[in-house]
Length: 339
Length: 166
Image (cartoon, rainbow over the protein chains, first blue to last red):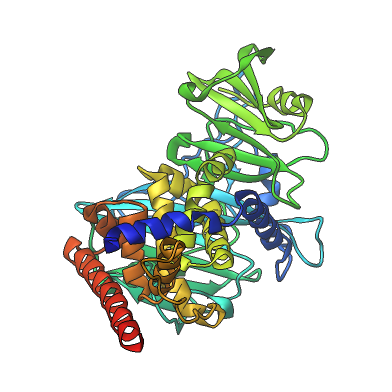
């Protein structure tokens, strides 16, 4: 037999050796839950905890003042006239950025729920992350700044090669850089509340940056991170009052709120309910009870239920979904703050 | 993160099969894909924004495999001697030939194996493989050529040895 056909036949014959999908999915969920449950130190009075109580203010987060390339910290929120209906609450990031590489920055800001601490498993611990694309001429940089509360500096793992000790802004850490390989520049700095702060600056595939550029940018981003966060993020819609026992665990918000999603649950394990901005083309299901005057569609598949609220944010629908009872989805949907 | 769940459910079987071809071993394939899925979860917004999220995750599996095996070499299951080579009159010869090839593939350097898997299992064009591995098409062709040469030479040498013994 031709060797190339023999190789193909060999692979085809061994497809049956692949692990079972359901088992791997279950194990992955356990690992995600486990990561949430094991945190070295509790985050006392984390900034994220106060998110639900934020007053409605109008500050455009991460809008970069042009002259100095500074990231807005949200320190000076501007009050606006109270609207007739509840305003969408802005979200405060657990930490703020003080500097970004020059250029136009698109960003996604996230709050990540990493479960309870070992000492207080019932108290949620949160971390934040900024994922940014900074474009300057033909150079496109990917910048990721993330709290890794479960990863102490001495357990740092690099994509870009072996790490070396570094001290930035008085914080000890380890860094690694490889301009042409995966990872670009990476640094883990000691986090004031335990774990580490991770900064990664890399050139987007197809773009180029010298190793020294990446190092300079990455170090400067890391040096200018401030805790606790004051940066305000404006989502496309808000959660409003949640049913008893449920909390906002995570949020993902793109610049200008173009993409908004929340995870809702007890935050001690993987959050079971999602509320997210969708696309009209994604909507399926049969007509359900109207929510806040909006038509709805409801679908159920293998116990996973989705309630679509049509034209919830201008023409875009919002989905509330999870493997929970239909009544629980409606209880959340009825209190969403829609535009 | 419902999108994440949907994505994983839709693509997990393929990712597991692909990881099995890369690692040659069920448990390692499961470990590799789990590692990647945890990363995908944490970076879902970036993954889902990619033009082809499935290709993006395939690249993550490949990259993790390329760095993963070297850092976890102690966990690698030792590959034994190839089974007795197939004889033309053996009714199980095709099966034996495949098992022989499976073990020869396992001994290839990992980058060569990745190229072979992408080309002959995933059936990707060399340009797509180059894009996925972040290298030139010429490099892909070089890896493939070396791998095929190694496999062909190994088969030829074994056949010569058997001919001498008989």
